[in-house]
Amino acid sequence: ARVGSSAMPENPYVTPASDVLPSGEPGADDELLRKTHLRFEANVHALGLLYYLIGVLWVLIAAGILSQGFDGLTEEQYFERIGLLFLTPVFAPAFLIAARGLRLRRPWGRIITIVLATVGLLGFPFGTIINGFILYLMFSKKGAHVFTPEYRRVIANTPHVRHKTSIFVWVAAGALFAAILVAIVAAVSS
Image 1 (cartoon, rainbow, N blue to C red):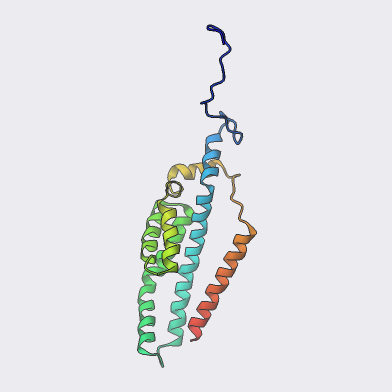
Image 2 (cartoon, rainbow, N blue to C red):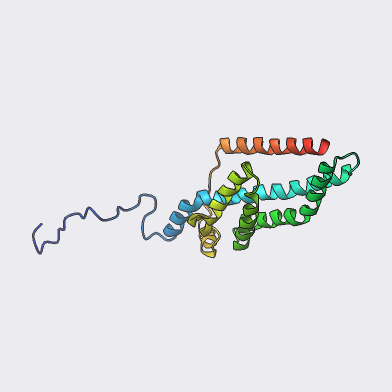
């Protein structure tokens, strides 16, 4: 190119324009931000649903223990059931409150979830793995951003952006729920 010419050579170091959203369009930044955080948002939403189920199941297990009474139990079974009954007023509400906070993406829901997941790490091996993932979700940059007021504004500005859950996830969730119900029925009937 000649000096003084208006034609400039193309800069190979310039960031390419995105095909996803045209720049300058109102809400384009919000939509792009939402799409980059959508998987974390969906995981937080699903975790809230799981925590609702855990809170309700905890209450149902305690009710089952109370309905069966304590006659004919070994000493070990007796203390296990007493322990569950004493922990129910602490953990059942904690899971239900955390679930509400997760579903609304509030910072206090994140804090309660971190506390519950930290305690859940003691449930080796599966509790450690599951709660390790939950802690990763809560402490990751994108996971933490989902709980900010800015991200709630982004959600309000982009109601058309949705996460699509695959059929595999629905089948896996149904199988997990069925397994939990079978375990509860087995525990209550023994």
